[in-house]
Length: 241
Length: 326
Ligand SMILES: Nc1ncnc2c1ncn2[C@@H]1O[C@H](COP(=O)(O)OP(=O)(O)OP(=O)(O)O)[C@@H](O)[C@H]1O
Ligand SMILES: [Mg+2]
Image: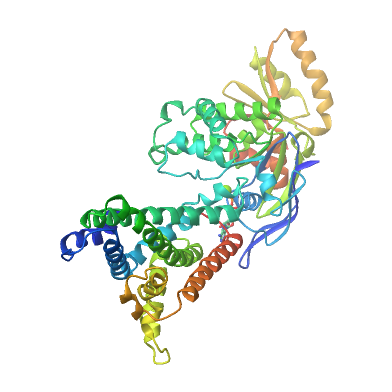
């Protein structure tokens, strides 16, 4: 999976434009542009979403499926600790899975622009912001697929079900006549909206209409609600296996 | 105080009633045998005790605390061994036990120490670095036993723990349980349908059939049927046969593999107990074995499941019947 995540870096390696100006300032602009396009077209596109869903729906469903949940229930640990522990474990793997290629992209572009250490420090905030936004978006997706995975209790079916729901919500429902801007339901679109907040050097992001704060609040609430409902489902569930 | 106490514990699966109004009472320090035929509801009951299933209604108190409200405080003191061993199959035994130890609240060091000790104790020391999925079912069961013991629990809940063990393993296991109860004062709740095993280790039983508790208490106090059938081995069985077949209170007498089996008319048991030793002593015949033919637990079961003492003979035993009286 990690190899797949490096694809945008490889693409950038072969396709980056000719560099006319060197230094930290042009580097930051270029970094924002390339990160935005990679995130929108690849990292948070349907492929990235699929990877997040697979990772997050395996966490609890595999415990339930293999019956090991029953081992956890006879231990002095809270069910909320189990759910939160799993969620943050999943988010950590996502952070590594995305953080590493982001970092390589940063180092590579810094080298291209011969910006040296100064280049790394100026783009560091952008890197963290991109990672935060990615995790926020994929976290909401993850919390949702965790909830479904508890209800379905089979990792594979849970992934498929989450994916089906996400696909319908992003690409099919919004195209019904009573939705005005179908593309807004798209997570790739939303990442553009969120990036706008801090990637000010990349004016191209202006085509993504919408308030980044509203979007961020929305995704955060999805995460919180997803975790709360997962917890409720864990409490209500019976463990046969 | 009872370590496990349930009140009207009941479980329906849809409309199907699997456990009904169970009032378990498991005293402190006892080895409590939870006995019942296949499908009686033993595993279902244990899953409710361990919070895997929700009771349809009824109460569960463990250490006097409410389950599920005080689950955490209860589980600090409970070790559980499921019917089918469950484990993280990708881990090796060592990693798995340390992980379970950590979940039980041990520190890293404690978990390592305890794991090393238990690996030897349950007899899988040589396999410590084998993946769990590569083990045989008996070996898995041993690991599962170690996992139940790792938190130094006061109460062990074991669901058919000997099912996959070899004969020697069974004997060892029973010895260990008795030791855990006697020396360390642990309370052990163990489900089984093997009468002889329960007999060897348990002092209390609860007998469950079709989801209902049909008897519960100290094994020694449960049966009303007095034993009237004895296994006898002497230095001269021939003469003993001659003597006993004369007696009107001996209802049946037969020999099987050199052992005499005598069934005595219950009303005249005292007479038999007086005359028989006297005869042996006066004739200089040595008594090598004298024991009740059925164990107390078997008698309890026969009584509760309405198995006729008389019919049992034809069905269950093949022996040469020397004397038959009606
Ligand atoms: N999830 C379920 N849905 C419906 N019926 C069930 C379910 N689980 C168990 N049962 C039924 O409940 C009854 C009791 O099952 P349980 O596993 O408690 O028996 P047991 O006493 O443990 O038997 P065994 O000695 O074979 O282990 C069985 O008839 C079984 O078919
Ligand atoms: Mg069972």
